[in-house]
Length: 549
Image (cartoon, helix red, strand yellow):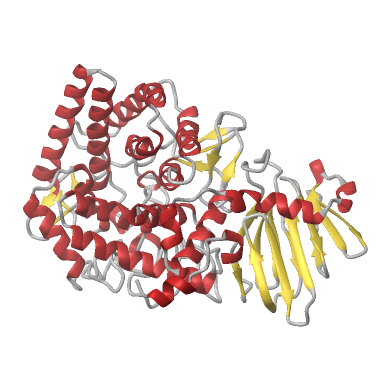
């Protein structure tokens, strides 16, 4: 490390690192369970926009103000803008239902779900169901201190102090975002839980929750455990776990099985054997449901459920609109089978820890059997990649996707196959793009676009593949993938002040202009490009702290 850099590096103070000369758009503001009760149905959710702030929930309310800042601070629950003329505008969430603003602003809403009142230089805006006009007199500085308390008192690993300034700033943004995505137990969800982004994805999602918990394990291992418990709260008596749950509803499809994998990583921090004993039977029932209900042709390989939705053929896979599913057929999938085999492997380890030797043998045998089938049925010698299998014709499909790398995580590939997969990351004709790993290979131009899973890079896939490469001792390749991804995340955070859902693999189109299920077409069909996205922040934190430890 350069001595000058070390001397000039500031102490890690999260609020100071969140201060910028820019008013960024797309940052979400919502009250956090870490500060008090949240309210799914009536709690305020807002986002920063170029003209000020938009409350998006429980109804639209536009708050216009001057955003030409000399200095701006935005956290998940307060904002402050110091204008070039010295004037100060600031706002703070007093609780789940009330936003107090000091300074000149214009409030516009036509919805009876939003109420407001003004006095002197103050405006109070709130959910009508819980509106208390007397809070216009609340002590702003006291509320500000309360909202910043968690950030100011957070005990971080000593290694966080040694990060570069760019990493520290992105880290602070990630931590602030993570705070705002924690919701209180409510309805059928009995534990604190998380959302991908509070708006528009307001519910709890299965694999998102696992990725959130993986990042949170470094910050609060017990809260990370609760995030897994929350998903299990909604489990059916037959073991089924819905891909999306809110306090009052469950969806009817599932999502990638990675809960045991996440629990294993959390236990590395919490060492809570009592928790392991409690969740073990639930995790077992979950993978048994997958094995029983998603192997529709009985060949031992599982297939994702296919929906009758053009822009989301397989929400169950998490890769909603991937061209893998354009055929609208249930395909034996390398990602699904890799996830399931990985769960078998982890459950064998859990069973051993719990003294369930017979269970351990059974899970190990199932891991070996499924890994064998993945290699026998899903490996393409021609493409040196795992591919989807069309069970009708017993042939591999021509779509080369990032899912083809995921058997690395369960240990299915031989060392030779693992090296062959790694070679793709340097091959511009397949997955060696400016930022690997594109969701679709560059040689598949007939399928490729800038739309979600039809080309762009997803951080969770890169995170999985890097872990898989490391498993095979391909540490240089894993480090290269991790470093490139972290650098791009930090570049974008510096420019936009947010973590995006996905990134252009060619680094040609900035994330706000990427397509989202064909809707984000500038000038024609504007659509929310997802900002402050959950797992992009939590996996960034996991990578950053795990690398520094």
